[in-house]
Every structure is written in structure tokens, then in C-alpha cells.
Length: 181
Figure (tube, rainbow, N blue to C red):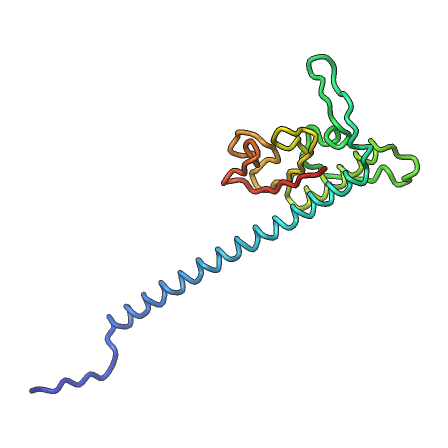
């Protein structure tokens, strides 16, 4: 029997080893990307929760600002509170300057507008949108603070970009909802 002397590694073996190594590195890279996405999402949720909690605490501190009143005329007439009224038509603002520096001269409605403007400006700096809507369900005396980011809008509706639909989160939504009472 003839003895074969092998003195090195063949080129095919090197290529196969490099291919296996590259598949492993690619898998690890994808895992790292997923971890970074999850970390970013968790950070956005914490920021959104802080905004929602801040607004709900301000609402709770200004009980008179939650007193319902009528706005609009005839067909467009709605019953709202000062916070809902201050948020109507806007989800964020791009600039802010304090209006109630002297707290003894501000009414509860002016405080509500000041609170809303502070929150909306902070939301804009974080790339988020804020709204206060009636909570879904039978009891409409409860307010829900919606905070959304990305393409999601802070509303309860049937659109693909809505945060919730009849109180249920949509799978593609990026938002939080906090009940404020």
C-alpha cells in the first residue's frame, strides 16, 4: 500500500471554512441588529410613558381644567374640557415660550393650554405625537393620553396608522395609551 503524504490544507477546505465562518458572523450581526432595534423601541416606550404620565399628572393637578364646556356653534358643537380643547387639531408644536410665568394671574384654562404646549413641544423634540381622547368603552368620562411615534397617529380609529381600533392596539402601531382620570 502506497503512503500519501499530505503536507497542507487544500484550497477547497479553506473556502468551506471561510464560508461557514461568514454564515456564523452574519447570523451574529443580524442578532445584534435585532437587539439594537428592541433597545430603541424600549427607549421610545419609556419616553412616551414619561410624556403621558407627565400630562396626566398635570391634568390631575388642574381639576378645574377638566371641567367640560361647549365649543363650536350649531353643527360643530362639542363638549370638551380645557385639555382636549387645547390639543384639538395638533399633535405637536415646533416652538414654545412660557405664557403663565406669573401663576397667580393664570386661569385653569390658561394653565391647561400651558401644560399642553409644554408637552407638545417636548413630544416634538422626541419625534412623538400626543393626543387626549375619550377612552374607548361605555364610560366616556375618562380621558386617555395617547403618545405615538413613527408613522402612527395618536388616535383610536380604523386606519392602518391609528394607535388603536376600538381600544385594541394594532399590530403595526408604535404608541402607548395611558388612562387619566
